[in-house]
Length: 373
Image 1: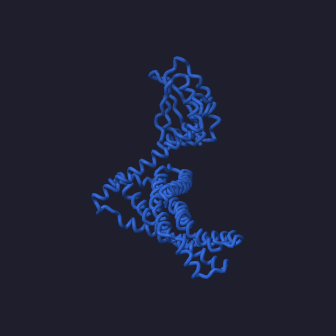
Image 2: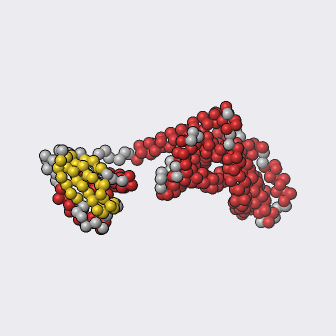
Image 3: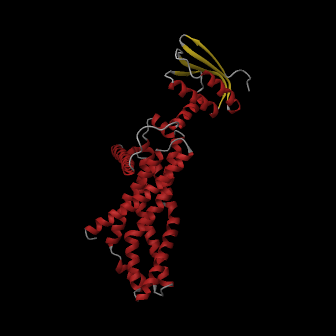
């Protein structure tokens, strides 16, 4: 540590020039604070302040805090100030300290808005961001239609393998178990009324029309949606997306469009596979728990399930897949340069996706009920 005085000051050319030296760190914080205090308050006839930081050998948050506090005192006295000779890293630290302390001191200004107003503003921002991403995707799809050779087949196939093929085992297992649980509880309750046979109708209706797509979509939102957000967020943090733009590539066309196209195609297939697994799980319970023959179970299921049930269930899947992809990619692009931001946006991606899945499913249910399906 340098033993020289941390501050020397001289008035020249109508300016108060302050030369800083040595280590502006925690070990000398007390000494630096005393010397800065001796300069305040500045005389009325003193000129603006220029601080030369070229000779500073060390600079940490203590030094940044003291310098930021001195700046506020100077500007509070009606003087201007500027810093010379500060390294970019130290200047960044000083700017961060200024941002952190923006709310310091006596708080004045307008009170926080009424909670419903805050909610409406936040909702408006979310809708605006969602629509902006949707518009960018439509534009990228249009360019792709005009230039089919620019379609990134390798990336799309890779994403399809990750999103669809690798997800099949976990979806089979979970939906099978869900089918087991629904069937067991159904037979347990309906047996009191001697209506075991109608449990099969309930299972077929519930799984093929609603639960199959809903369960698989929620699993895809947690598995694939979070993965998309984390991948794009990591690329944003490493400035890879900026590098793509610099090289003349559109990140929406290169990174986002293949992922969303895969979700639109894969989710109906995964929903169908999951529904079949749930029906198989229910069949196991029908045979082992309810004592129903497998022939009777299949016959009753065939009578209970119509093509309309399958169509109503599957038609929702592409729309839900698109919404999951848009939300996940949008959250990934909003990640800032920290691990905390990445975790926050990944969580928001999953929560928003699940909320939108349930809301879309409800809207489709109302629509199909209104048209008599």
